[in-house]
Image (cartoon, rainbow, N blue to C red; front, top):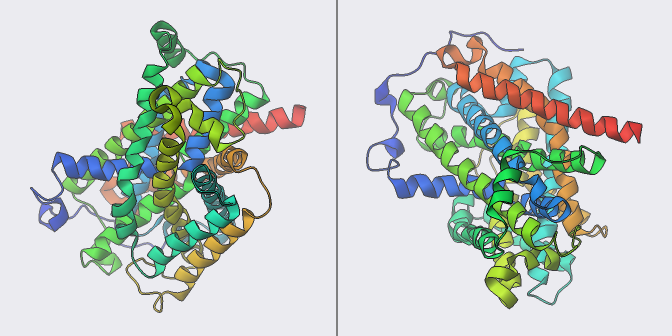
Length: 440
């Protein structure tokens, strides 16, 4: 249970860290750059496969999911970032402080397994995309990609990996151009965007849950809360007392970055569905079983170069997202066990933390040798994540409204309206899907 201390008070404005001082992080380029990274990590290969599958199967009739998900994405990532900033601990360290072990262990297990499965599916997506360009078996490519990613995490740094691959994520904008060049009817696009037109059968419900799972993935807000803590450690705030609390300027900066990142992510989400809905669905390709089929949605823009463009986008976001998933699993485990773990620590200083990263990477690689179709696995990993989302959202909303944890920084009315609505929608979607399986 929560160890009661003096209620947290917002620290004075002179706490403002150097990175947020004028001229450091307030510039538009820095803001957009940080937002693109956050958004690109959310549009991981699993998300690309899920959204492409939705467009292929349901056509333009699935466009409405993008505006529905946008406020949900914003509020979830903001609340997770705020928890890390104000409470001074990552998500599961906070859950361990606040709730009994019978609550802690099931949610840790669910999030941990979700991260492992998601990492495996995304490595498979990277392998399938690169196999379009390199004549090697997908498992071999997966192994090599995982080895490179793990080497950066253990021997180098995620920051270096991010600098190398973040610009490849901009290849995702190709879906915007491809959708426009496919020339869908503007009136139909507008109508399908604003008015849901799906029959809520089992297939549609599964795709809705998959889209929720990929856009609101547990690994994103596990990572987000812990990165707020890591950032403060990097600024020299090593003790919990130093990290607790947040200034108005820090929270404003977080809101700006979250809004920028989620707008980017949602824009790509929308245009992936639009491009595949306008090209693959009318052509009768209602199921995406290979990376080549997913890449073909880019042919109105790139022609024979569609495979290259698709591979660049998937590899870029995959190399950004997979370390987030494997590190997120390590955060989940060590915090659930009440142990310390930080990317600022050396491997020799945090053996369980880095050992978990290595073990999760190895298991994720191993799962790709079981013969699963990598493109179908991407969608199913989203469904798995979709089931872990509702309970974690519920706990986050409860904690960020708890004055014993947040002091005066509890959620405002607008955040609560969208946050609790998101909790209700995610629980309802998963319950309906389970009901459709039972009835069938």
